[in-house]
Length: 375
Ligand code: BGC
Ligand code: CA
Image 1 (tube, helix red, strand yellow):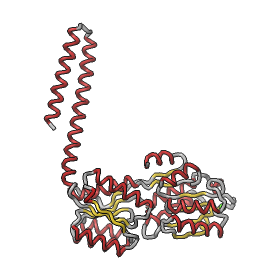
Image 2 (cartoon, helix red, strand yellow; image 1 turned 180 degrees about the vertical axis):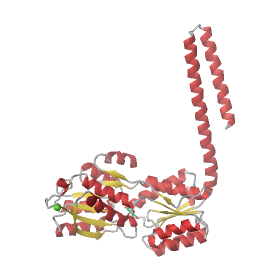
Image 3 (tube, protein in one colour; image 1 turned 135 degrees about the horizontal axis):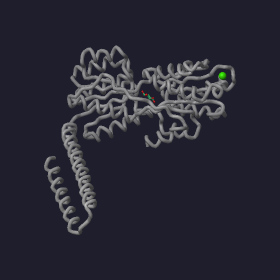
């Protein structure tokens, strides 16, 4: 690093003296000389700082890359067919590689929504001697068992997406274990869904003018606390705004588009007075939209629909007005933080036991911007 900087300095010093020399020979004004010198000096400073920055990066890459390239990472995903977790896992893999892990040493497995299958996969990873585990549990209620297995094998553990309960997180803290959770606070996403509706104004949303908001709720898999919080906080945002709500139906759609489509078709035929459809995620909102359209209803005119995640397809619907809004569940930030946490354990830097991130409210105003950023 030193060598590079010194040689650059020498070259720049030389060019400075040549510049100064040329100027005096051609009898330029002192001002010209001064500005040439100033320019050359600026260039030199820029070059030197670029060189320092570049070399520092090279050194960091070499150290980290050298260490990380032979580290084995095991990643357990609760279910590959989940749209959101697919975005998450693809981004996680490419970011891990960008940080210096070898693609051959990253193994990502599909829990197929079955805890017994996933527990087996975890046991296999332990037998294989992975250096770090990143786990999206099938059942967050199994976290204590998973933690015990992994900690006993002395492997650091990063949970993602399905947050274990407070008692479990407290154990990591109390025992000073290398275990953390990376995710966003689902209460925020629920609140944002409710606020998107509130921002339309009660006169607009209360289509039948009875002073109440008739809604149906389509919930995700209760194994993810996101489902529970989004259900609770979306409605709470309406109540906090002083609105009266009337729940016509509340069903579990398990984060799944086809299931939600069926549930919403049934709910709309039983309750044509529905004014708002809340879905805990976009996959289900896309299913809801199919049934809304099949029922001859028009989002933004005679019904309102919100989801969470900001899947590209949902963003396109928000832009087209066929979805009222969604909430960006930032899989970039979450997957990067999860990988960074894994690296911090491997380098000995360690982590807090909870690593959060923010959701972003998405309406027609910013949907294009979010779409551009996720593409
Ligand atoms: C996402 C859902 C996803 C679920 C998986 C949630 O945070 O919003 O789309 O199905 O995580 O656990
Ligand atoms: Ca009403």
